[in-house]
Image 1 (spheres, each protein chain N blue to C red):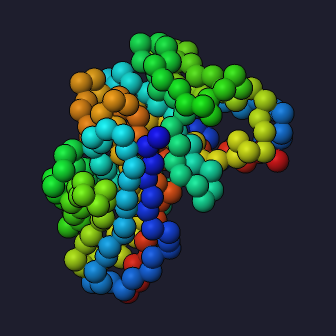
Image 2 (image 1 turned 90 degrees about the vertical axis):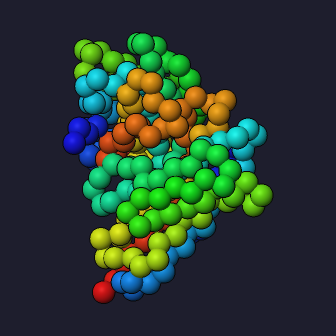
Length: 113
Length: 116
């Protein structure tokens, strides 16, 4: 079945550091890929998405490229801020699965001054 | 911005008791979902609901679970007889009609269920 694996946290960075959160997936079809973010006390929010191979999703300085050859969708940001501290979830939606999402475990990011 | 509201934020119950987790989806949404996350594990799909019936459910969603949209605004998840392993964060989500690729899926902030 479908699955998503993402790096374990917590990840602790200093402000303005470069961020990478790794995500790899297994799917039978041609999934759409997503990153969701959960800020403290809030719900999951869509951060960015990509629907086909080589697409790059981007939002708020974050970006991720859909790499079919490595089945990866790593999240990157060139310069993190304290306000980026949150839990980040990688997810996929298989074309044949309607809008059901398969999530990874989430990676907590802490950004310090 | 519209939001999905879940109550309570934290529910503590004794094993074997019934619990009802409540969600108020965004008013014009037509598709509704429950997900859960056991501590340290993945967020797991439980059930999707459309047109007043379950459209898909996972293996987790056994006879102990049920969902209901009793009054056109609330969307509830009932666990009939809770077990210790039901302890988790439960997320409700809703979606606009015609959404493609989940970009219109909105999640609530979750209910942390603790079964003692």
